[in-house]
Amino acid sequence: MLLLTATPYLTLYLHEGASRAIEAQWLGFGSSAILRQATLDAVVLARQYRITGWIADDRLLGSLPPADLEWIAQQVLPQLIGVGLKRFARIESMDPHNKMLIGQAQTQTQPQMPFEWRLFTDLQAARVWACG
Image (cartoon, rainbow, N blue to C red; front, top):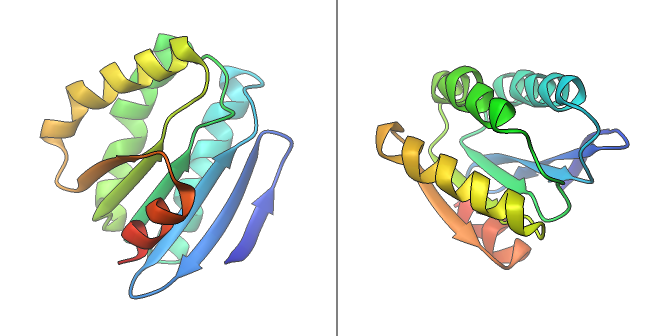
């Protein structure tokens, strides 16, 4: 596991296995602007490292505004498709409101996405699957 970048709100790691994956470990929610810029930076790294797996560790991510979730669905997920994403592993937020909102957003967008989504409670299992 290689540390790519660390900010007060997000740490990004690169995993190399049978496939490459980025792990986005959220450490909190600062603002919509911070979330969006950090997410776009992660997509740039995903493209640079030609990843096929993504691990979204949302456990410490605070409550997101619905507009940010809509932005992710419309702006970020299509870019991940373009990168060649095949597996998206998500570890749910501990914030009950965020857990519900992200779950609803995933349910709405998942059928339209050409990659596999899985929900995990164990980070190591998510890593193994995303890099498989």
